[in-house]
Structure formats: C-alpha cells, structure tokens
Length: 104
Image (tube, rainbow, N blue to C red; front, top):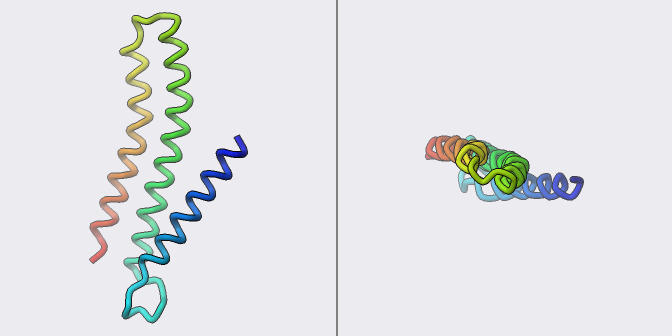
C-alpha cells in the first residue's frame, strides 16, 4: 500500500511540474499565467481521476473475478460495477478536456 501511495504522489508531482514547465508563455516574463494554472488544473484532475479509478477497479475487479469464479451466471451484474469504476476516469478526462478548452 505504501508503494502505491508513493507512486501516486510521484506521478502527481511530475504532472504538476510538467504543467508548470509547459504552461509558461513568452510574454509572461517567466511567471505562471492563467493558462498555466488551467493546464496544471487539467493535469491534476486527470491524474487524480486516473489514480482513483485504478484503486476502484482494483477492488471491484478482484471481487468480480472471485464472484464469477463461484457463480459464472452473475458475470453481467459484476461487470456493471467494474464499468462504474472506470467511469471515474472518463469523467476526469471530460473535466480535463473542458479545462483545456479554456486555454487560448
């Protein structure tokens, strides 16, 4: 568990630093502009959604495989729970895209 948290923190930090580096504009005299903050926010939203979805899919996928091994006829029902967990990442992608379209 500690390894996963360290990995998640490292990925978030990397995304923020990448967003700061890529969001600087020539006319801003080296500072972070509004476009930079939007890019950082989009990166954080996507990273947070992906990390949250990975934890959710990990839990629901494990339970789904166990339940399907015992009763194969409930495969369709447990697949819905895994798909709902994947929807977290899709919503994060949608928010990141909406933020990204605000950059001029």
